[in-house]
Image (cartoon, rainbow over all chains, first blue to last red; front, side, top):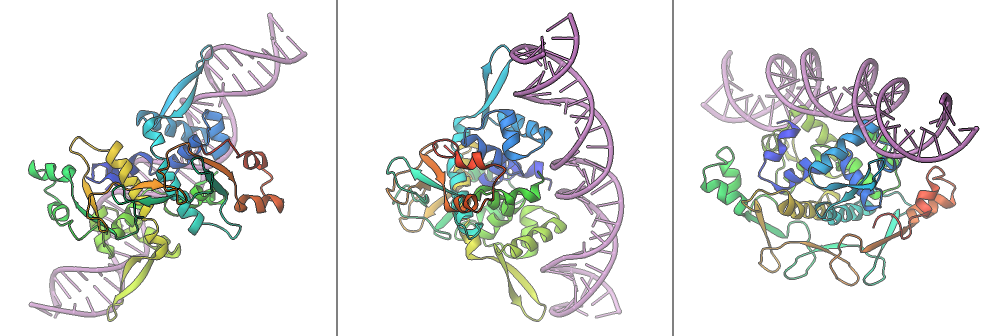
Length: 174
Length: 174
DNA sequence: TTGACAGGTTCCACATTGGAACCTTAATAT
DNA sequence: ATATTAAGGTTCCAATGTGGAACCTGTCAA
């Protein structure tokens, strides 16, 4: 399978990675959260070539993760800003930061600390269940077929991997 | 800058992505969480070529995200299993699932639902502050220079982007 | 002895990337 | 009026990465 086809998988991870799962894209989004907005700022911050950057920005605008906002009418200059879809990637970036701080750090410690505006403390975000508010660790979630797979099974799609999808319960994903 | 050099950035996101930020790696890790463990199982599940898969598995073992475990002594066959470092990627995958369910889904809905063992309910994990337990949204975290940057500044490293690093407060990352 | 199976490696054509040079438009400096 | 600079690109080429197919190796089972 070629990379362009991975978003045909009935899997939210595969579909998400089809949008931001390549070499530079998530770093561009990181910079967007740092208030970097202009072509030349992205280029200076990332050290990416103009050509690559141009590509990636066009794709992120197409995917509606970024939007172009006019900031100089006479010269028709645009900034790139996060849309709601882009802003919603914040938890993804913050969980990556947490992991990187713990596992991909030199002995000097975390490069950056984050103060939570709400409580004023240095925070280490964690992942909790929205029902019982307990922290979620690996292997504590049991996957079951959701409507996204069920409806396709009913309509007779997904023949190829039918077993794989039906067999989810108590199996894969945990 | 070439991709191999990105982990020289003093940034946990860049360093983390240097490990799992390429095309197939995070999907391999996804499958490892689904209890996929053997070379041929990964290959069947992903549709990746053997050569690529071999590459990636070697690198993930080098990075200690996966470890090889002997399961057939006579034929010296090994399985690939998540280490603690790998298991700790669970929140990263789950936040990606959440985002994908919301923004990269067709009209059939989420492919998979997750039941939280602890409470028995379908869960939508969220990212909360470990101090005040409030949910964290974009722009609610204020970055400040951490020891990982501070110590390098004291030792006179980081000359190139000194301003960028010093200027964090109230600026970048939110 | 033949074949199958797991887990690879080798080879090649093709796609993606990084780096440098060039282009376009408007603004500014001389 | 002319030259220079800046932003935001595009074009080209060499080097690197990738997908597909074929091949290899060491069991095992019939």
